[in-house]
Amino acid sequence: MSQQPKMYNTGADYALAIIGGKWKSVILYLLAGHPRRPSELVKQLGTSYKVLSDQLREMTDDGLIARKSFNTIPPHVEYRLTAEGENLYSALRYLNYWGEQRAAAKGDAKIMCTDEMKQVGDDGLCVVTKKHLHHWRQEIVQTKKQDEANEN
Image (tube, rainbow, N blue to C red):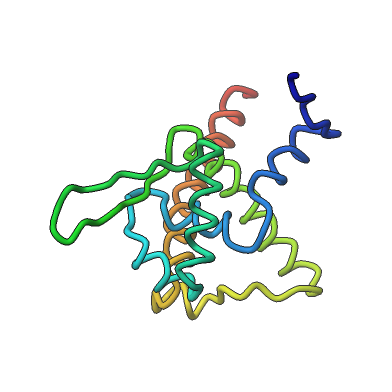
């Protein structure tokens, strides 16, 4: 007997169900650009190995990250984003930017990643986010210039 697929109102509902929870979006940010070992992730997240292991397993099952085991002594494992995870990360970059801008404009929320943390580099998420947002903003400026040139 085949199971009926779950129903979602929108694609966004479906995507948010996949990355819902406290750690999944942060894990995506931390894995952007290069693979990491679980010990690195635990250190940056400040969570337990069990919580991290559960999140990594779910994300691996969803096809967002890939696990690579190394046959060394002692053995070690690394996780990296898959192509699908990279695509989701691209969407999260904009969502992060939108959230920061809205929080700053409305003043009704405080983003934990402060400018001081970004400058010092104490928070891995902030460092990765700052680097990628800078690149993303450059893309926006270039696109605007191209659009303006095409209109003239």
